[in-house]
Image: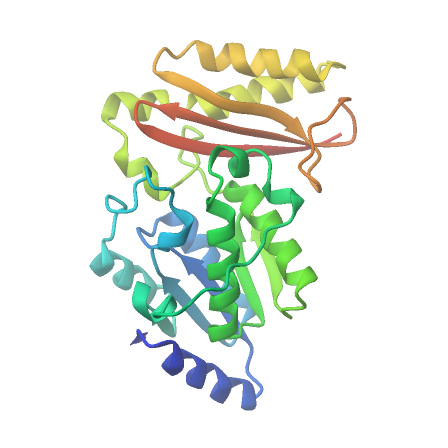
Length: 281
């Protein structure tokens, strides 16, 4: 496995493989890799000739009060996982390499990024859209893989690729969960043992919402109330949002029908968790 830090080196590697007619898969990450990332890497390995994993804690997607300096960076562990999974290039740029002096361009995000996470974290998606655009320009992948856990992010990136004609196939893979249902996330390591036990309440709220829908609930507010009551059973949990949305537009639903996205964010202590569940009736 090559460890490359300079964008120019990755671009040259990619250009050489493209000239040979090889397909390039790409899994962009912020490191602290877990089995959710592993599932993306394995899926990319199966469908592509060569594979790049980027490890870059992107400063522009963190707000001023968020956890940029505390974000986990276990690079030895991450490299070992990548080697074990047959990654060809581990791209580890520095912030200065990605945002050199004089860099001014920021990608303006579409309407789909303005609700939910976009409302709670107003600078987040502009940072995501900008860094993903830059990474796609450097790596020039044929296919890029993302996890469904970050549903709104994946929807934004699909829109970005379509609107800017970036020529990358976006493959969104199912959320990988712990045995008790908690969605795997790099931030789970922040949870204390007690908070870790409490963190499953978000997934339990989705299960309660799904059961209500399958039992014939017709009112969106009724289902959202059932989900909120489930979360309220856990005293350490604080709801930021719980909603029924259209899976394509992420607009709030007014009727319980068709395909439904249960979307939520809560805090357990100081740790913020997001998750979702897609329901097709």
